[in-house]
Amino acid sequence: MLGDVLLITEKHQKAGESIIEHILNHRKPKMMIAISGESGSGKTELAHVVAKGLRKHGIMAKPLHIDNYYRIHPLERTEWRKNHGIEKVVGPGEYDWDTLNRNIKEFKEGTSSTGPCVDLVTEQIDQLTTDYSGIDMLIIDGLYAIKTDNVDVRVFIELTYHETKKAQVVRGKEPQNEYRMAVLEKEHQEVQALKPTADILIGMDYSFRLAK
Image (cartoon, rainbow, N blue to C red):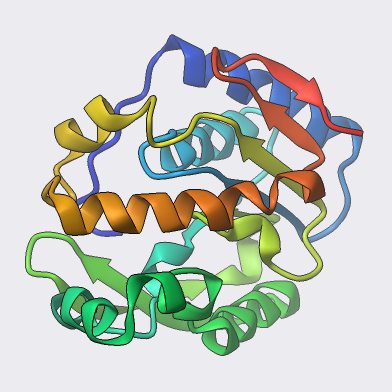
């Protein structure tokens, strides 16, 4: 997402190094990594650290933020959720999976790809074109990223929105009010349901462990 604020710390670096080691031990052509976790848990920071770290090993990895793939425009999403009921609509169904899967297919084929990119300053949706011919890996991050089909390594961050409220305020993506807390609680339920599918768990203290 254009204009996103990254708060990279030592814990992200250490967890990223462990993930990179795991990736190198299981490397395959056109590999896909997915990182899921609740709002403010550090998904984008971890994706950034892993992608940059892999370059030291001669691997070009591209982060892909699936929060760019919401079906409802950012300026209309709050009203849409309220009108349709937060409990009914908040979840993976809000994503445009068809477009995401098309972009993933283009990555696999090594062709040019155009997909959505949200500008957090203007709250408009731009179209970003990427040449995947020189990209070796895709690192997908987002609330429900590990739900993506055919992912090779699924990473789940165990921090919940209860522990990450400070990070959410600092990042300033959305105001903290009754509506936002209701959304966070529904996302919490949806995200936690994906935990059993993870290959790697990043603990509350950002420790690394294999899930299986």
